[in-house]
Length: 170
Length: 282
Image (tube, rainbow over all chains, first blue to last red):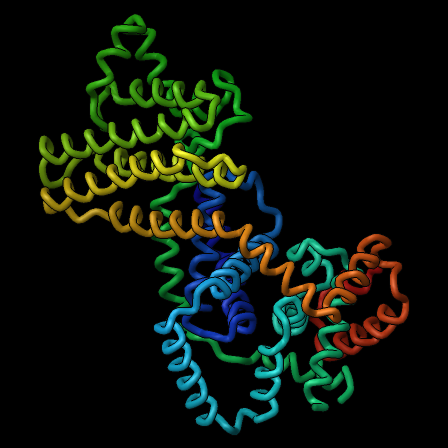
């Protein structure tokens, strides 16, 4: 029993940062990204504790799958109701982010621009690009998490890159 | 801009800093959470596949109880055990009979009702424990954990039934019963001025549950909305179609795309040796 705890904690240490960053680039909001990261790991543990998963051979794919579902749920929820309060909150967040951004001009306008363009992509594209290039996942891993074939993942990455390129040329 | 440069830039986003404090505090929370939801085969109820009597986990947990039953001559002990509290010698027999009842209840809706009854029982136990055993109540955590398990199990059944489209009075009734149980538990703890994690967990769980239900109920709506979205955007349709084709003949599709992408992959390899070689297998 202790082994499972230990393995899980090790897996947390290894992947938590990547998951947090991944969620952030998908939804462009740090506070919510942190919430969803927490939920990802709680949910992962719960499904293990409750025996919903018999065995886990790959923590990475397991975590990313859960995170992915939470992100999709988040978008669904967002579509349904954007209350005035939330809009204000979001505006505040953007203001904070902007202030932070201005603070670190040195870090490169290029980077900011790219982040902006990335956030404008549709989520399907964001997902594969972030996994491939920011989370350093292999095509195989991405196909496991997204339940798409490898060929399909490749095509998606390719298209996503083309769309992103066009944004630069605009 | 070339693909290569774009990928290079994307990779630079890897260095985007994250809040270390957040990750550290989450690690702490996670530890507590893991303690509270231990991996325990005997207690968790995800049963259908497990054979009632040969299912090892239940047997393991309650083998002691079985011995006691035999020693006392069956029925009498079971009866006597029903008033026992966690920590009592006879309590394992009580849990055994409950586990058996649970296992032998195959209808999922009936099972949900059973869980609400068990939750009520646990609340009764908690009340008695707090009244009788005072400040450092023995066995309280056992009752607390079982209470949470019962409530969550009932909620899960409601979720599943709703997903299958079996709505109606069942979901409402169970939800109402669970709400009553939660309120009752809260009152008891408040009255005894006992700080319990259970309330916090139940509240969080309730929130999650309500969200889930809402999501299930509105899923249809969203699906329709998405379909509308798709038909508005012809470009999207084209893409989906192509991807469907790709799915059909998997990796062999669209040689042009593949080629260009392999180029990209090679570039990655140069930049970053960590890239998994799997991606170049096919």
